[in-house]
Length: 142
Image 1: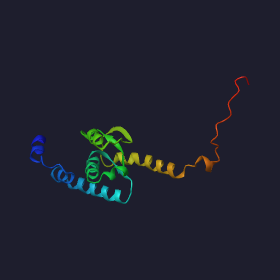
Image 2 (image 1 turned 60 degrees about the horizontal axis):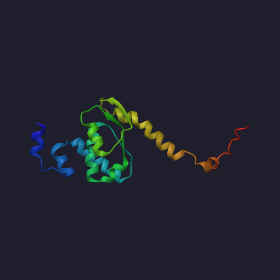
Image 3 (image 1 turned 45 degrees about the vertical axis):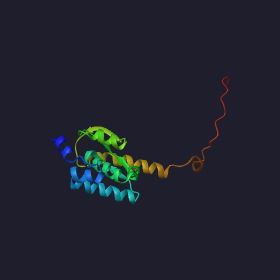
Image 4 (image 1 turned 90 degrees about the vertical axis):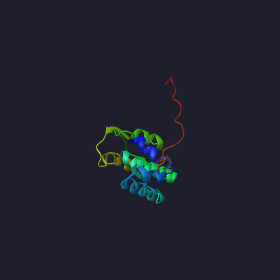
């Protein structure tokens, strides 16, 4: 059945053509939302197989979308590993989940929030008064 569908739509090579032939409204809506989020320079937390399919479409339409994507997890859904490989993406979590309902995003979100806080609030050596000079060498005889 899959081979017949691929043969029937062999000319659907452009991202939006492939989406029109093989995707659903939910994938189209997510891909559009990802394109707009990237335009607004927002972080996109991509959760699971369907969202990764939408991310693939969005990144093929506008490659700069990839810079804003954080992939929550590698699901147990068939093909998700191949999708992530096509995107060159490393997921934050690999917990063999196939629960749906955004469960991977729920688990990954605290990691993203922590990373943002770390980057925004971490003191520099200068602001913390830490010397960048090497400590004096220890005398082995002492």
